[in-house]
Image (cartoon, rainbow, N blue to C red; front, side):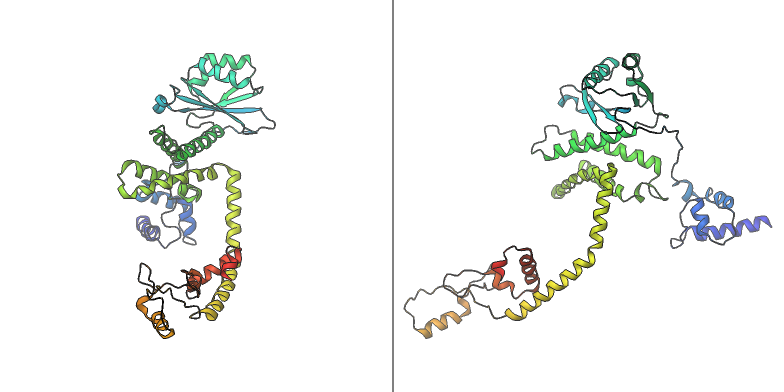
Length: 397
């Protein structure tokens, strides 16, 4: 009896789960159970059934719980974070500098960036001495568990300066604020290289792409890719990152030929700062919401301008049709001969498409595009909008 009931339950769950129209299809345990509504199936039964389905087990997002340290600061220089950027692949372009030390104050977000030739304790001590010469010293310094920060020389230096040192709780977790600062610095440097006419470091694109890829990989490993809620691609702010990274690999790995214009999409990397800085994200979101609410106003304005454009067409269509006529070699014509010459269509000036050009009503007046505008609604609408903006209003009127 129980086996029969289990088979029936399995059929029901299978029918619901693999139906794309069902709200719980391809969902997790709780979301699928909730979408089943009044169907009398226990959550444990749903979980057991899902664990037998390859569709669920092979695509189930990985979720790990990490111990994290809370960041609570009240004053400037209470806590700093530090991290290193590995630039060994382009050291030959940087006079042998292989690393960038990034140090940031958690509260003020004031940052220091110092190039390093190596990451030994002695080199790191000299770098922090240069930072401390600016007159600022932290009470606490947080880093990851890298040996460059935990070695004896660096620890002795911190104790001499009365700086409390601690690391992130887990080896897989970095100093988040310092990591964000590194991403912002990477974006700024990337924009600077894109603005250069001649790139002095051809391999720098691989470094930038690698940094962006690592950032995306960390997000995907922590949140999942797309299957469940709150995963990487469920956040619209990550769509831009995904597109930028994908296009970067496409342009690097494929000979695009005439499609090399895709490289221009690299300028979208500058917009990554919006997703990194919370304040910018709020501002851009507010602007987009304001634009959305102006939709009805824009439609009404366009409707009113269209009315004026239609009035202009009704008033001037076919009333300003002065053709550009070639001058005759005969300068001693009678009125009848002159009239015949002006009416002969073979004497009309044509454009490259064989369309008769419209001119002013005086000799040597030349081609007048404004007269042509009066007979085309799209161009009349454009002229009305330009007049509304005050651009060339006198010519249009």
